[in-house]
Each structure stands twice: as structure tokens, then as C-alpha cells.
Image (cartoon, rainbow, N blue to C red; front, side, top):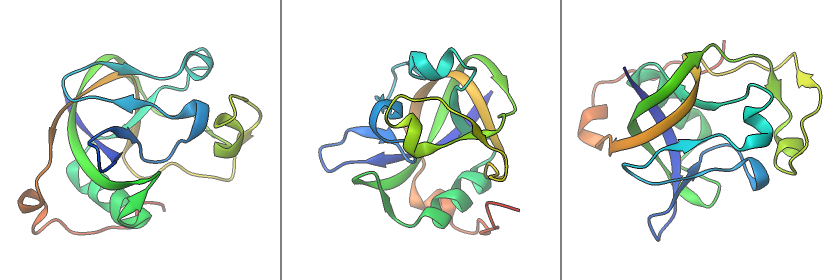
Length: 140
């Protein structure tokens, strides 16, 4: 099963989570397995990815062009382990400090978000592959 993930890619080529910062942020490498930080995985919060390229593209467009100190790029990822629907969102400010508190019941995940135990970034989706893909609102 292939999924898509949006990364913040820095000038030196290092890839990070597009949303999470601090202790919740994960550094990724093409061809290498990455998993959620232990303090999040222990609570059932795994890495997020998107089911379709259109959903990943729409999420990227909704964030803008840069985030977390890098340019946003979409990668096709292989999954390792289980997948599941995400639960309630956690407060990003708290998890960046390593604190898991109450969930944000009023917040919604972007359309097509799934959680996976681990991902392996396989290849960058080239801009030519995005031609003709329609932007749809990421959040309902």
C-alpha cells in the first residue's frame, strides 16, 4: 500500500515533519524507516500520511510553500506496520515540548489523513505529476 506524505525539506536536504516541531518532530531519510517519537507512539499517535496524491497536494497548498524551516514537498511513502484512522488531535504546542495533554476535540484532521506505525519515504513526487490535480479544501 502506498501513501503520500508532505515534508519540510531544508536547503541541506534534510527532511522533517511538515507540522510538528520540537520533541514531536521527526527527521526522515529516503529509503529509511521512521517511526513516531516514543512518547506519542505509547499514546497511540503515529505518523500521519495521506491516502491519495490529491489529498496530500491539497494539504500542502493549504499550508503554503514553506513550513518548519523548509520547502514543502510531497513524497510517496511505503508503510510499515499497522494503519488506522486518527483519533482526536493533540495540541501541537504541547507535544512539541513532549507533553501529551487533552485532545482538541474541535479540531479536525485534513481529509484523507491516516496514521501509520512507520513510513519509509520512497521518492519525491515531481511537479509534473501534480499537473491537472484539483485543489480541494483540506478540512471540511
